[in-house]
Amino acid sequence: MAIKKALLLFTLFWLFLNEAFAGIQVTPAIVRIEAKGSEYEIPLTIKNTSDKDMSYLVTYLSNNIRNEDGDWIYANTATNKAAIDWASLDKEKMEIKPGGNDDIKVVIKMKPTMTGDFNLALLLEQDQDKMREKLSPENKTGQKIGAQILPLMRVAIPIYIRKASEDMMTIKIGSAIKYDPIEMTALTKGIKGIKATQVIENSGMYETLATTHCDLINAENNAKLKTTDALPKIIALLPTERRRVECFFPGVLPTGKYEIVTYYDLNIRNTEIVEKGSQRKEFDVSAELAQSLQSELDSELPAPVITDVTELAEQFDGKPKPFKIKITNPTTETLKLEPLVELGEGSDIKTSVEPENLEIEGGKSAILTVKMDTAAEVKSIYGHLLLTATNMDGYAPYRLPIALRASDATVSSEIKVTGIKVEADEKSKHFKLLLSNTGSDYVPDITGEITIKSFTGQIIDKLKPAFKDTALLPGEKTLVYGVSDKVEPGSYKLDVSLQDRTGKAYQQEVEATVN
Image (cartoon, one colour):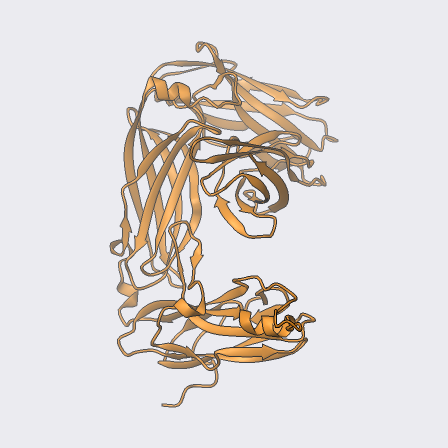
């Protein structure tokens, strides 16, 4: 059978150009195939956009897998690549002049028994010996001189192939997803709290998306204390892959018995096959652990209450509507709460709460109504609803952010790292970044990643940090906290990549010194 020249029998997604390394571009950057036959040719174009006389490239295919932390793993070099007997390249070497381009083809010959999702990667790597010959002419003594060629200057172009089975639509996803036991960890340094970790595995044939979140529950009265998205929130789990899922609940917990519930919404990518699953783990909080979970930034413990909203935030025309807030007492003791609305300086706004005092039995809930009377010219309202537990000594008020913006107001949000501190213990380096909202708008539910790089650009570690607070009013600050066991003393660049709940991204590069 002749290899099909036209890519008509499968779906090919063409993404933006992929910048492989200085001066090299590749299209497409990712290839996805819905295979209807067994033999295909996948064309890719390599372009030299640099001013170098020549780019010498070695090309090869590698398995395309991720480790439990989600980092891609490929063959280190062409010499230790894995044997793939159903895919090949029409070229093993390429030479491209400045401004020129060349094509390469990935040839797929799927076996009759191959069913499911398969993935590999096209690797493009500079030929070190060829580049030295071109850039480093020999002098009279026979010794080569000139430019230094850095190792591992390469790019990987992922290729995903799906050969669906006839019974695909009847597949039960849950039977293919395997769960390791949930592990609970108490974090008592930096931002303190409880972390749940679980590794999940896809033992099925198809790539599965898992959307995850976690609930923290008081096991004694079954009250749900808090819900949080897991990290990562959405996982693309390839066949045979294992990925780590983490849920972090910062702050204090009273002494007692608790339960963590991790929920998984499972979907085979590009199909309507959907299932739901969950995993549970009970754990105890002793009096000693409850005390050690107190945040090092707080002089007092926050009042142990939970609200059904994370903030009072909306657009309004002239006057905001009354807010009704459900407040739950997660403890076994009766709480006497005194609510108070505290707004920013200069706010000429009348506020009231009903009832003026709340008494909530252990495990029970109550409704609080917050009203605000504003003038028509008011453009924005920022502040907090404070809930003070008057019968509990040594506890600070629970703080619920208020962020109301007129529909015609023009505001912008901005997050900046305004301070860095690095501390070390026997095993790890603790990175503490002070994060400030320097804009004029509220920033909701911050998540993100910190990439630690050497000053030459080499990636040393990627941190999934914890946040003391996940929302910031204008002018407010919070702490970002990450731990690394891969960093040695020296100077580093930190790529701080953050995102709020609306999807807005915040990028910043800062420098840090580790002693």
